[in-house]
Length: 316
Image (cartoon, rainbow, N blue to C red; front, top):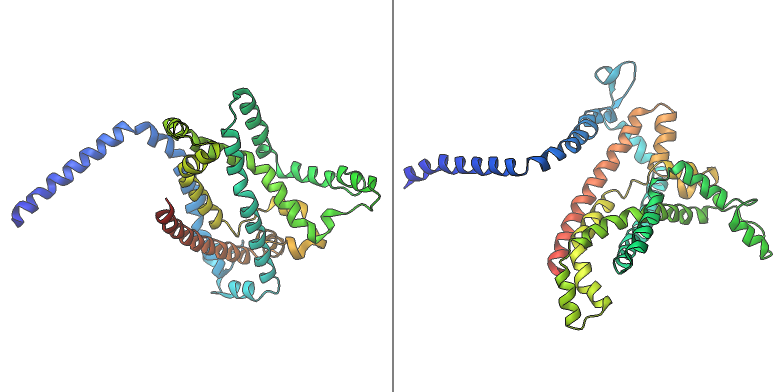
């Protein structure tokens, strides 16, 4: 019995190798298209991981990684003991939560609305108009926001003055900054997210909708029982990625719109690292902040993935 089992192992391995070769030969072009993506990840994401070591050094550009002094967790001690750390952490989390709460459902709702449009020309024109802001640079968009909200020449304050009120310097008011930033981000990204969900909806079997209509289901019931469950895996994946990036607020949009008057609500890890780590030449500190964000993001992704699986088993 044991001898027969040992003799069958090479045959099993051979059959698996043959199946693998057949699979690769059948899908060779698909895997070939993946090569640029894998090269990008390997070169720009994995190779730079070797530089994490400078987070534990007093890094000097002159001495390099091998010659810089090892300081252990001193950079992390400075980060956690900094008087600005908890303010920056709070701002980063609050802005990300606002973005998830308002920005994550927006493309889903918009995609559901566009999916119900039957006039194809109007649908295509609407899609084009909606995703064009995605290609606008944050430099241009920040200039648009500044001009739009300008106390002297902005159309918003023009309306306010026409009503007999004093103009409001919105970008100098901390209570308005988060709303302005999140609104700009949602407007910029909602169209691009809509494309992803429309692509997911296109894979749903049309016969399901036909059967639902025959059974008397209206539009809302079809959306609830067919469309939403059909795109649920896409929603879960994007939600997991959003949760994993909860400490990533982006540098350009905050840096271009904030000012010393709004530091208390606008300063996030990217701008904090730029001022303390890069302008002051503390590259090790900047690396420590990046490593801290990466570890927190990894933990959140793993936790969100497990919660999504549990939620999926109970609901779907």
